[in-house]
Length: 239
Image (cartoon, rainbow, N blue to C red):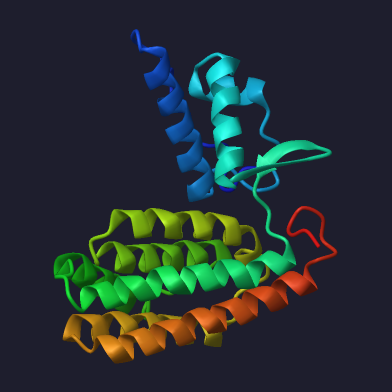
């Protein structure tokens, strides 16, 4: 199943003559983007024929892209075939440790490099607006949360850190979207996000880092608990 319906069609990537190497890169980039964004869900089988039709190419560049994405850790194979990475419960603490390392580096980097204040100001405005209009579904909250942390890290000016965080987000997302919303938890999450970005904008980076890491640790604990509760549900997590 694809979250929110089928992925948006990319049209024919071969609408004009494209060198083979460039075509491989286009298919790889498109498929990677759809996996990282969640446009293709972790429970959907990644069949070469269907993906070739989706991207308007032959099966060969799709097959090569899937092999590269397996090497990247974003695609795995089981008895049912290829699908987007689905985390084992034991993987979650390690993924969150990596997330903490990446995001902490973004804050410490901001201590010696200028941050994108315009981007952070817009981010703050968005989350202040959520106090009056909070997200109504778990999918919406997870999407907003991922966007917050990616934007915060991107503001530190290192695209490689941001790309790595997007990969971590893609791997954890199948578990994060499980379960319903707790209204009090949503209010608390909104307040925490606002507090973090306000501290970064104010230059209070030590306290921003402390709050950010506590926030990530709290998210990890909730996600691990949710994964353990959902372990019996097929397709969500692996033991």
